[in-house]
Length: 262
Ligand code: PLP
Image (cartoon, rainbow, N blue to C red):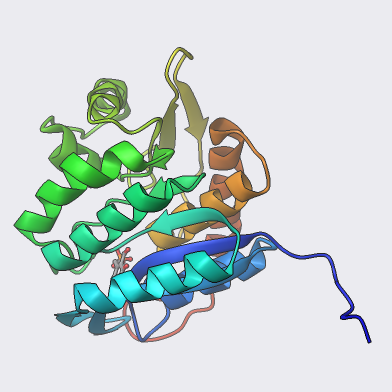
């Protein structure tokens, strides 16, 4: 009997760290991808020991396992978009850079995760160099927050006025477009910069909640889904912003620390 074919959801590959509390990291990515109508497949770059109270420990995954996982998925599935989050070690960053170069996949969203909001380092110094020199140039879009944008651009980004200059500098590192998320600013605003287009400012509103753990992961995964669905970078950023704002409003108040956004 022929197999019945249902309409297939776009497959979105999340490459990121594992947060056992599912606030951030790969399990949060899968929740976000499912909520945005796509099918999430994953490759874990690092294990972390953490909860809503913060990150206690980070353990890198061997590069060989990362490469094997990514190759297995790429051979089997048609990947419509990729989200790259926490890389952790230089070995993981190398494996991911080489995979992206070999496969030249479309719709690659790179969230340059550097630290957790509790202050733990989620990227080694060597891995940062690989991210800067090998991974950003393979991104359709990068989605740093203002702290990450400042580190990557070497400029101070403390207010919305400085976002455009930093985004221009980040384009020079090779990313095809940039979204700087400014959700932590007093007046929240994101800046989207696509070459040869006027920068677009997406105004947001401050939502009073302690459940902010994983907002960056949710934003970048939602953006990958919107790109997989054929949206432009600017429209995908708008969609992802709406998704995160709605998640923040509905966030369950879990745990004793910074609760999960979704
Ligand atoms: N843990 C993992 C595995 C992550 O991927 C990230 C962010 O991407 C974090 C922690 C940090 O999340 P937060 O900034 O909400 O602490």
